[in-house]
Image 1 (cartoon, rainbow over the protein chains, first blue to last red):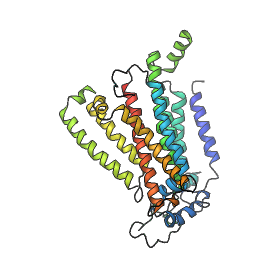
Image 2: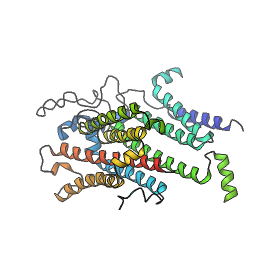
Image 3: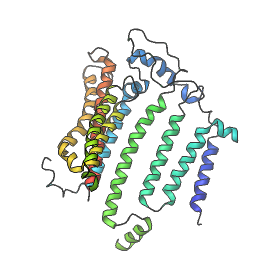
Image 4: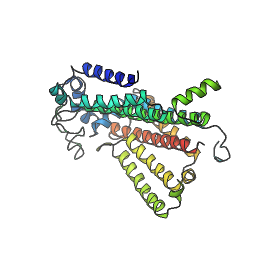
Length: 98
Length: 131
Length: 138
């Protein structure tokens, strides 16, 4: 049982490699990730939005609701660190705090 | 076997990186090393999904000649540009990783102040004896 | 950290580099439309200029320049700007975050610029806030 960690890690790696045997080759233009909705984004997003950067156009226009959720996540992260670490005992340093 | 490794080199590389992170998370006893392992695991998955977007002979997903004149739209073909969707989805994942690491480090600071140690076995003893 | 405060070379160089880093961060946010970049990337570059000042001059200098009240207001103002643009589109008659209805030239491009600025401000303020809390805990 000394090497149980290494055995579990190796077994997980082997299972992952077995699961990826059916994946398409690297750089294949006909892979399923590049076929369904992404040609429509590439071909028509410059006419509709007039923004050359396709990644920003998709992030801020077609999928802007996800980006709103993500700005909320970073705000919640800062809020969580504030709640964990601020104890209220450093009041004398922050006179400008309401 | 070897032609699988050459044709799918991104899968093999990122599974190796993933297993390094996984081993660091499970077998190390220091809590900071566990947080670093979690970070490695997360970044390997992000890089793997971005590598699924590659196409042979394609350029970055910014329209060539896009900001010269806005009157004439250039003809765009889907095989000239790299698939932009995985890039977009992984931007969110990167920022979520930042927030998660920040909260994890804050929790580690609190644990150190309360118990005085960051080793897992010493922590278990102190928690069991002090309740 | 004390050795960095007492070295004049480190303090001078880091103050100079921090100014140019902030300019570069603003450039990355504004040029998210035609070159790689955007809100998140530029926001983190802006935050890294404050972290460089904290490493070289001490956290007291950063507290003097960027007070706690300003940090808190800026963190919320970015998300408020983002949702505000969406609500303006809702009030004008279209769906939430549907930029085509705004009465500006090239409305979708300018709406995207507005929300990228909002996201950049939030990411900068949140990252500096996380760093400040981690450094000031004793």
